[in-house]
Structure formats: structure tokens, C-alpha cells
Length: 328
Image (cartoon, rainbow, N blue to C red; front, top):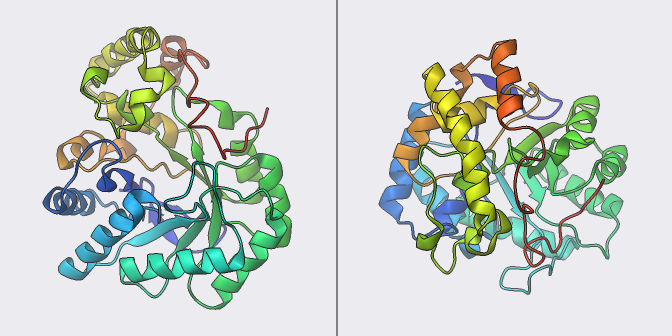
């Protein structure tokens, strides 16, 4: 796996990180053995960077990572997140110094680590100016608890405000072949400011897998159950587009997920996508995405098959989008 820099410093990580939200049962039940097998497989593919959060399974994802690192005597580079009130109402966030300190110290305890490489504000608390939040994060950095910090689901304008106070290491927003809005300023702002852009859900929550998910099999806690893009008639319309993309991938001898992930990597060397899975088998389909090289004709064909805006349905329902900073 090739390496890319994390922010404007010398810290290098694998160009693809592993998103660990599914360790917590977000897309269906998981278990420790499955999680450990997936982490073993990630290491075999040269992935050394994990993304988790306090809120994932109320700390379960972090606990499993901490247990794995202790059991295997191996330490990943880690990004985690705080700022969402665990157990609170949707949209209830706390970016106060006391709230973030409690969240960070809890994360470090579960991860069994003294510090993490990257700490994100998972969601903004609108009652506290972002400049004040940055000052809190700088304190954590000075205390040696984090090496750098970032924000999730913010706008380019908010990034610039934060960056004026102290350099931001990374911004994490959704980005994939079917979610393109970061092209309206965020990817460009990150490149200009030398901030790493970290696309989450680069495989469209499984829609770019080797087989289409079956919405009738989604459990009650599966995020996609009430997501507009996975509800009919949107789901079938989206599958029609992606079936043509799958045919293109097959014609090149590439997996669908590997090609979708390679497309994200191809958008700039300051991008580090974080596909999520708890399945070692699924990881094997995209674990070598960095080896796929596109010609200009490949890029043009992908653009023709999946033009910007092709996706039917919003990326979130009205309930799911609470707390996310919209722009454009």
C-alpha cells in the first residue's frame, strides 16, 4: 500500500485507511473474532491507519481496536472523534473543553493508548465558535494527547476560520462517485491549505460492492434502512446506473469496489479515503485499490457512466442530516 502524508507534516499513513464504524454493529451484528480477522487482513494489505469514534457502539469500536492492539502487540495509527453526546438526542453535541476532554480521555482509555494521531470534532456544537474549539484542541496537542486535529462534516468556510487559529490536519466529509458535493469547494480548500481530505463512505455504504445489498434484509439498526438512496424507487434506479459501472469494471479486470475506491484516490494525493468493513473478504476486494491506474479514457468512461448528480435520493434523510453543516 502506498503512503500519503497526513496534514502538512511528516506523518505518513497508508493511502487507504480502514473505517471501523461497522465494528460497532452499525450495519448489522459483529463479533470480536470477525473484527480481529478483518484487522489482520488490513495489515496484510499494508493498511496501518484506522478511523473510529467514541460514539461508534458507545465505545465498542474503540474497545475492540484496543483489545486487538494489546493482543497482537501491534499499534495502528489511529484517528478517533468526539463531540457528539453519547446516548443523547440526535443533534445533541458538546464541543466544550470539559466535554471534549472527557470524551478524549475515555477514548484513550478504551484504545489503551496515551495519545492518538488525529482527533476530530465529530459534529459541531453551534453554541461555541469554531475558533474557541480550536483553542481547546491546541491544548490537547500541547499536552501530548493528540498529534493533530480535524473536523467532520464542516464547510470550507468553517475550515478556513479554524485554520487561521492553528493548522488543521484533516477534514472528513462524505465523498464518492455518488456523493460529489465536496468538489464544490472543500477538496480545493484542503489542497490550498495543505489539509488532508478524508472521504468517508467512499463505497457508498456498500452500493459499490461486488453484489448489491438487499434492502429487505436490513436490520432495524442498519443506517441504510431509512436512507433515501436505499428506498424504492430510488434504489432500483441507482442500481441500474451502477450495474453499467460494474460492467465497465469487469471489462478492465477490476473489482467494482476497488475501482470506485481507486477513483477517489485519483482525485488528488491529499485524499485518504476510509472505506469501512468488518469483513476480511470484503476488504480483499478493494485492498489493492492503490494499484489500479486509470487512463484518460477510463476517466472519461466513468464520467459518462456515472455523471455527477446521477444518484437518486438525498444522501441523508431529514432526520439523519441533523447536525451536519451544509453549504452550496
